[in-house]
Image (cartoon, rainbow, N blue to C red; front, side):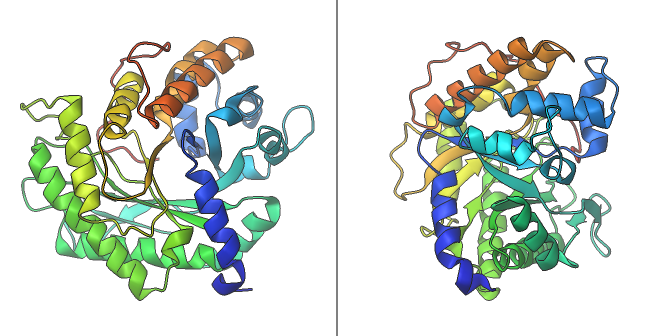
Length: 355
C-alpha cells in the first residue's frame, strides 16, 4: 500500500475532520503530562485513573455533535474502557474519528540556540502508522515547537529542520493511510509584539509547505494546526481579540495553500473563554480562502471538565466538556455569544510548554 492507494480516503477523512461546526478534542497528553493534570485534582497517576478519566470523556452523550475527531495517546488507542469495550469503539459510537499522537517528543537541536528543539520519531514511523491504522486510527498529530526570543530565535536552522520534520512525518503517515495534522506551534513565551509573531509565523508556515511540496505530501489530505497569532505572554502591549483574529487570518492567507481543507487552531495557553472568543472573531471575518477555521483544543476543552470530574463525578465532568465543545462549535461558525456557556477565564499559559 502507498499514498496513492489511500489518496481518496485521506481526502475524505480530512474533509470530515474539518466539517463546519465541529472540531477536534486533543487528549493526547503523555503519561507524565496527564499525571500533572491529575495531580491538580488530587488523583494519582495510575493507568486505572487515566482510563477512568478518558473513558469519561469518550462516553459523553452528544459529544459527536460538536467534535469530529479525538487525538489519543498510544496507551489510550490500545486501551479498553472499564466496561471492557475498546476506547476506539466508544468514540465510534459517538461518531468521532480516532487519531493518534505519533511523535516521540522534543529534543535539543544541535547547532541551534540552546532553547531550540527538534521533534523526534521518524524512525519506523511508516510501520507504526500502519499498526495505528489497523487499530482504528485515521489521522495523526506531530508537534514541532518554535520560540521567539530577543537573541534571534527561531534561527534559520530551527525553522528549516522543524519544517522538514513536519513534512517527512506527513508523507510517512499518509503512506499508511493516516491524515497528518501538521502542527508548527509558536510558543507564547516572550515579550515580542503581535507584529513580530505574524512576521515569523508567516515565514515558518511558508517553509513548512515548501518542505511538504518537496516531499510529495497530498495537501488535500492534511490539516494545519497552528497557534493563533498573538503577542508574547510578557508583552506590555495588550491586543484586543478582534485584532488577534484579523492578524491570524491575514497571516494564514499569506502562507497556507488553498488546497488545505481545514485549519484547526491549538489553544496554546489561552483560557477556555478566550480560545472561544478569538475563534469566533475569526469566523466573522470574510476570508479569501475556503478553509474551514475550526479548533483542536486540549486544555481549553478539558480544564473545567477535569476539575468538575475530580476523580469521581462523571456527570459533572461530561456536562463541562459538552458545554465547552458546544461553545467552540458555535465559535467555529461565528455564532458564539461570550459567556453563554459555562467556562473558565483562568489563564492556561505554561512557560516552555512541552508534554
